[in-house]
Length: 373
View 1 (cartoon, rainbow, N blue to C red):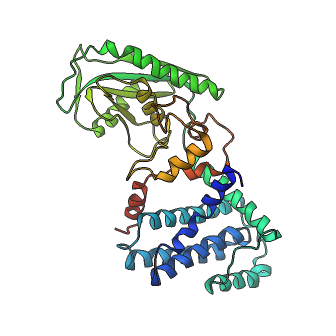
View 2: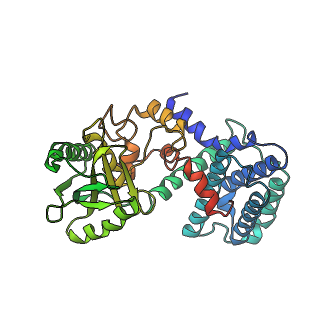
View 3: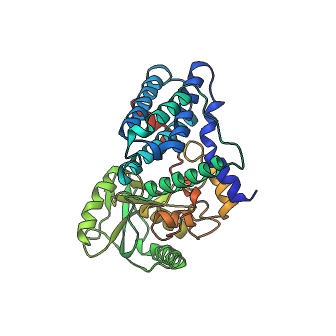
């Protein structure tokens, strides 16, 4: 089995992990939910509004049970898998609304649907035997749902193209003065922009990036939080209406960890602000390029405890080698997954969604969003 096939198996089998992650009645509830997800995957094309209503009621009942009984005992991995399962169901539901029900005469299919629901409720739904027509259909449905997941992840993200303005603002950071000559940042800024333009060309994209320093009467601004930086972004965006995209960089004269702040998840909003620290007493061009890619919508692919799970980095490096979003010290190349998120790669592979939104913190946010805390 090839590398990509192994990762495909890992991804499609991932929901089954919750079978072994709990015990007792919680385990039974989670197993029932897994069967519901499999059932929707295999039979969604037969559903009318009545059947979708039953699915939605079962999902709501499952959520209420988890919230009322097990909110304190769910692991982050269980919550992430539950979120993934609900995402799969919602994606099929959205597709059904887009294309319409394929069951024009629901009476003809009612008995069959009811029988399938009884099998589901009784726990008799099984994976299809290998080499059978049912397995081929199952694989095709899995392919469909993975591409639908890809589409839902990419939906709403802007294509990074046209004219881009990078505004570099020497900044007093939490009362730490900016003492260096800001013109000394010029070589690193130019190198970072050259990296980005070069990577765009690799994917046959043509972008133009202009940049400038911004001071106020020769004075440096003082901002205390990332929220302030994001809020000020709208001001700079209005200054440059002729540009398709504006990136704000707050350069800081101290060592630290650079980061990109956003109002909403990466790639969805133009409201962004980068805080660019020194690394070993100098500003690094690849760090700046990495953070600008974040502002465009790229995601991290490196492991960090409590941030991105180890499997993401391990599987990514096995399949694709390296990326500036995985290890900017080793390479300045942008990987095809993040190029796809930016609209530069138009041919996504099925398993791209495996690597996206894999931050550990997302599990906690999901609990809070669902009222499970």
